[in-house]
Image 1 (tube, rainbow, N blue to C red):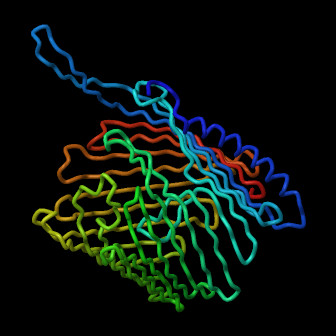
Image 2 (image 1 turned 90 degrees about the vertical axis):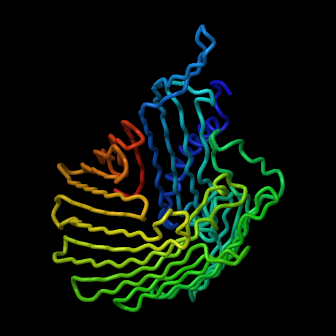
Image 3 (image 1 turned 180 degrees about the vertical axis):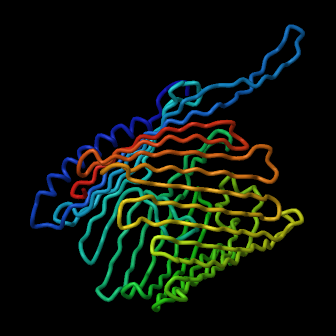
Length: 446
């Protein structure tokens, strides 16, 4: 492809122009007094990441022998994201949602092109109460684990007594792939996703739902998923349950049952059961389908203690059982233990603290992680946040370290500007530096 700009990069430029036009139009609509207040949020992030990478050069010496040498190649990729969320337009009947990304290698040392971009979300929603209609690109949350990303349309209807019904149909969005995973699938034959869901909710104390979604790619059936979920909050007790059943070859792809109970004013306890079968998540046309996956069941329990209104201490312990120990060599058992301390914001401006110590061991890989963060307000309209993490892998020769600092300023009502600097080192990457600049605009929200 040389250094030509990919079509996605040009499309994103046009999307940015549309975002500005929509922001201006939405602010004019906000002046109307006989319609619901318009809610707008526009945000743009720019991220620069520097990390050394290496390329294998091959040459032939005068004697005809082949020589291979790893050569360090510096790169300075620039990423940016733009998002717009505008609700209650046109007398409260229209909403617009957009999110796009772009990438540019400032050093242009790439044979695959120096620019790329795409639209992650871009859809319009019309409220014709009690019916809502949408069209465009969006994520559908029910169906296979992780949901579906589709270009299409859908409709939903909500009754006064809490019953909701919705349906969608569209073409699955093909994710961006790299050359290491082979050529992108053409998907010339039938490629479609569709589904429907019904739900009932009662004033935040009870909710149940059931849905069905089907996914086809290039004429191959990818998944048929029945999705059921529900929660019940009777007073101090909370119970949540859900399951995703693969009906192609009947089996449970994911299931969860959790409960939390406020034992007394300062103490609450919780328990959770999780079943995962990752192999049922992966469509048969995916390159990832060739890898072995392990089904496991995990049982966890935790206790949260709040001795003071602004202080929360939590401990959690979990055990994991693999149903295919052959994949995990000779270790079918694993565990996880976490201790968290968090200081919540006080009535007066002060420091917010958070500390987490986590130990995980699946029987093959052991990992200990310490994270800490603090945020404070040195001056009005200024916020400074500091974060750090230190990870120890039992088998890695080098530990992982992350340090990050963020400054957020409110230069004017409705505006926020922030900058983040971070430095990281991992067992794989010798050093990585990132800088991100972001700006957001929310009219009507000081």
